[in-house]
Length: 405
Image 1: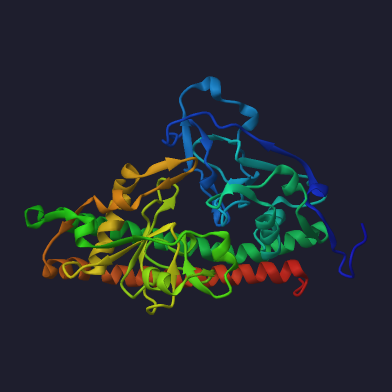
Image 2: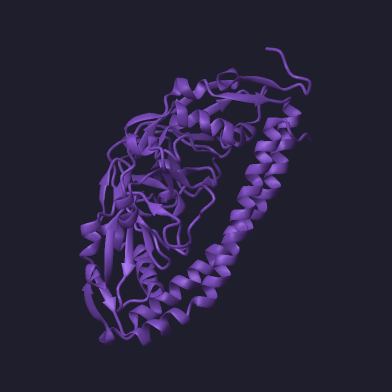
């Protein structure tokens, strides 16, 4: 195949693959393997931000273990099934304390080392150009769960510079990734501190607490369902979805639009202080929440989210602390209903939980106690978001040939 002036070739991924391998998914409890034990990877283990080996299901019956499906450090892993935002995620496996196997939804792409660097392929798979190909190739009867076939993966079109240049690109991108990792570690430390302080404050003074249903603490509403007609509406408005609502903050960098009627805009509009919770997520993340800090009517929300609007007895900041505490304690996971790899919190189940109501003065005392921690954490999260945009821009510039090294 002819190359361009820079010596780059445009060709399908299969030209540089020796093969694609998949494992199988036995029916297992949703409990991670212990160090040294065997486990099967969940799709949530594969993420563009890095490998997550703790996302696995423990294998107790060793007859289910197939060593040829074992994941090794350096493997290029690919998720063939997930939500529309995450299907086709790729990462490089790192060492783990568990012995992990591929599932039928996690693929190992075996790259020909004479033609390509697996790390370069991984970077390409996260580029906007290739992500768009993945979205176009993915299919499924449910908008919340999409699949991409192995033949479609092989057909993804990538730009291939000479091998030595691939490695230089990896070095440039890794330099930003190292800083991202350091910031993530700092955020994790602050999060541990915040969780400890929150637990201590909420668990002390139990005699002051009046337990009421969440529905009595505020208004609860599930968002609008995304449909073909709403996608194609002439007048569309920005809405938030699971991908935007992270733990304690909202990422506005990738917001989509759909149609809302005038009546729907009144129902699904967001106002400052509203709390958005992940309605559909992986089991350990279902109920993840953040306080909306935008203007009224600037954004709406999809049915993958639940909106909690505090009543007069509850400060939004206090409610958010309670919801994060419940996430940490597994309260949301305990009431969620699971379908395939997605757990659903359920508006009614959430509304029925017992909310620990205390006086407004006590709420202010509790929230004031961790605001400094949250400010530090938010500053780091903003830096992380900027680094992510920087890395993505570098990837797209390098892979398009607009910038050469």
